[in-house]
Image 1: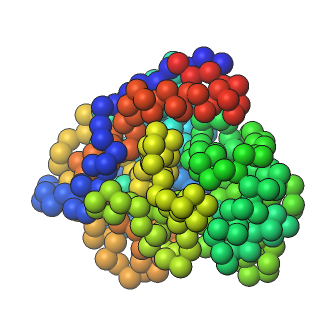
Image 2 (image 1 turned 30 degrees about the horizontal axis):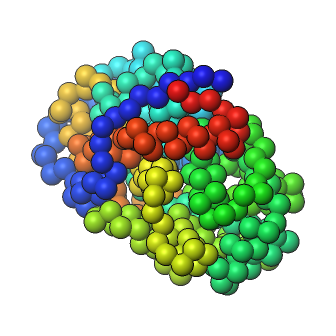
Image 3 (image 1 turned 120 degrees about the vertical axis):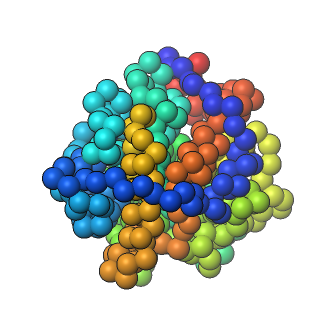
Length: 367
């Protein structure tokens, strides 16, 4: 299979320079009276992008000027490519079309080749939400969630069976993490989304997987309490200096950096680590977003941003968003676009490493 990659020249190390601050532009009075806003979700109804869109839906309806009707519209297919291509061609620029961005849509932009028609960096993000990645394994693997060194060594010895949508979908961050940790006896079953993977692990058909923080808290933590799976690691979080620290939602759980040091005796480094940092930046730091199409006016963009900031202060929203968004930072406007550009920017050396990894792991050709 041959695909091409569009490279964006940006530095991952600069990722969080814009994340700590948000746009403070005063929004103009765009009016949505009598209009219907359509939030396009380029995935199925059961996924994280769907939950993210529905979290904002009713609050946008109530608090955007003119109190417009707000509908969530699903257009799944191609790991986000079908819906994103549709949005590129059909989205209206009057503020009535928004797309819910998610990790797979970003990785598809990198790896989708000629199938990708959408111009991601011409779009106008209004909010970008970081969200942690939580790893868990069935206890039969020997993982107990008590000592990260012991857990990784158990996984190194075990035969690991996990799942993914395809070789270059968002699960690539998990595949690279396993590889760098020396977990090499790993089999991937393709064609599985996050919900299907989780259910298969609980049934015992797979023995290792990961969830976003929101999904983990809502759907997986109860199985940790039952002793079916153990929560042993997360991918960590990058602070405003670009340093990996522990996930703010799970500070007691070891990060990938902790796991790597436990088994290798040093911090991660090298080109493989650069590749994983890109995947973490895409999958954690830029996990979810609401984005307007190219050509949307500043007045409309600023109206959305000011409305979203107001919604975040509402106690009812905070209660509803606690598990979905967690204690992670939100970025707005140009700051959100800069984070996304820096996350997806891949240099030639790192690109070559990813291509070699995909070829060796899955006999998947990347050009």
